[in-house]
Amino acid sequence: MNIKFLIILFQAIMIVETSENPYAINQKEQAYGPAQIRQAALIDINEAENTQYVLRDFLGNIPLSFWAFCTYGKLYHAKTAEEFARIWNGGPVGHRKHSTLKYWKKVKTEKEKLCAESD
Image 1 (cartoon, rainbow, N blue to C red):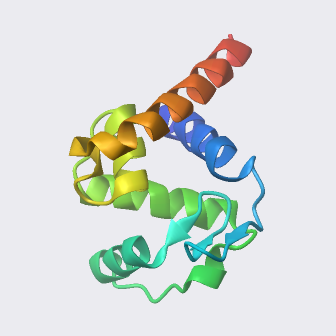
Image 2 (image 1 turned 180 degrees about the horizontal axis):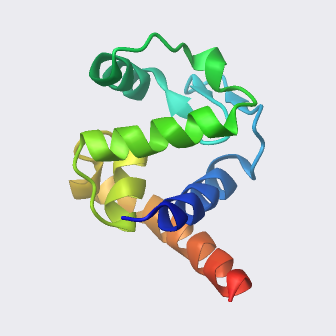
């Protein structure tokens, strides 16, 4: 999977999650930053990468959020855009959960718009 593909996918996720607001906080879900990372994902990332990030580190930090998104997808062997998006939304087995299909459709729509704009 190439970097351009991941950047476009990540931008689509930021649009769906926060309308690209890098400082977004969802208090109810305890989700932070432009891609709305949650504690469960951050624990997995920190353990896998031997890092000590906290949720607030992601506020206003698009590069760190992108790194976390890529790391989390690779950690759970995502190979396609759909797998990356559904794992991000639903956790390690999110790509197999029916509940993540609606999220994927939203991300796919935004991704297709972004790809059309870059043509």
